[in-house]
Image 1 (cartoon, helix red, strand yellow):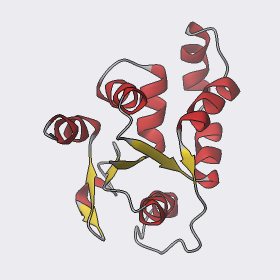
Image 2 (cartoon, helix red, strand yellow):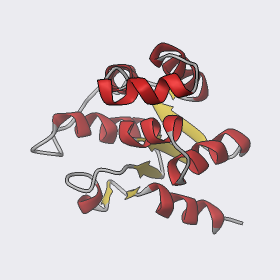
Image 3 (cartoon, one colour):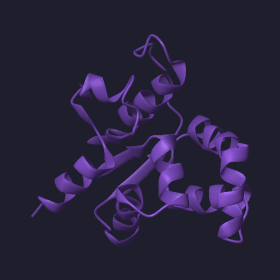
Length: 142
């Protein structure tokens, strides 16, 4: 199964226990799951992990934002969409998540974005789900 994780899910997976972490662990352990990202999303992750609110949490793991980004980048298949359509009128960053999923032919976009992405429900047949919902989908597969 092909997945694109929104930056908020990646941050939660890297820094806390919970559904995003369980989803990331499942993707690591299950060879049938492939995570996709783009240089733009990796840049967003790099920038986000620099926020002061995350620095102390990152310190608890005796690591750095750069190390976390490198670890995540090693887990994903990077691709570069040729076109980033305007889908989310109020947040162009979310368009990059959708463009990554379309380019990857993903089945799922996993996000915690309740304002812009989750209300859409799907885009071009790609389901947009929370981490908990994505875990349920993965658990229901044969």
